[in-house]
Amino acid sequence: MEELIAKRYIKALKANADLDSMKEMTTVFSTLAQSFKNDKFLNIIDNPNVDVKEKSTILLDAVKQANSSKIDNFIKLLVENKRISIIPAIANELQKDIAHSTKTYEGVVYSDTNIDTKLIENLSAGLGKKFNATITLKSVKNDFNGIKVDVEGLGIEINFSKDRIDSQIIEHIIKAI
Figure 1: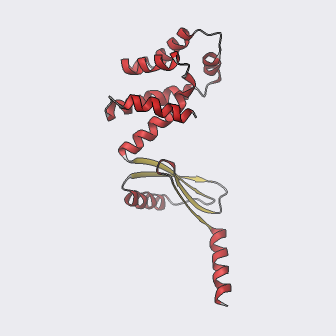
Figure 2: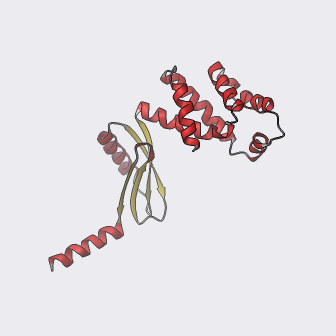
Figure 3: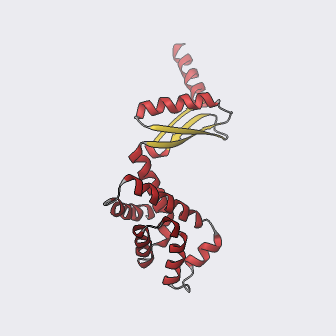
C-alpha cells in the first residue's frame, strides 16, 4: 500500500522536474531512508508525544545540505499529512523511476558455485542488448542448485536448475525408448 501512495507523490514531483533534479531527490530520499533503519530515529519519528513541528525540524535538518525548497516543501507536506513512514517507499520508487528513465538496471545472479567475473560481464552485456538497457549484475552465492538471474527493475527472472535439466533428460531418454 505504501508503494501506491509513494507513486502518487512521485507523480506530483515528476510533473515539474527534470532528470537531474529527480536524481538529486533520489539521493536525498535514499539517504533519508537509511535513517529509518536506525532504532533511535524510529523511536523519535513514531513517538506520538513528539510534536509534528519537531519531527519536521528533524527531517528538514537531515536534508539541509540538498538546499532545495522543493524537497523542503515536500517533506513538510509528508509531515503535515502524517506520511513520514512512506519515505523509504518513496526512495525505493524514485530509484525505480530513475532506473526506468535512464534504462539502467541492477540485477543479481544466484548460484551455489562461484561464477567467473567474465561470465557475469557477458551475461550483463547479452541481457543489455536483449532489453536495450544497461544491466549490471552481481553474483551472490546461495544454495540454489543451478543459476538464477533476477533483474527486478525489468521484471526478469531466468533460472537454469540442474535438477530440472536432469529430469528433462531422463524424460527424453524414456520417450526415446
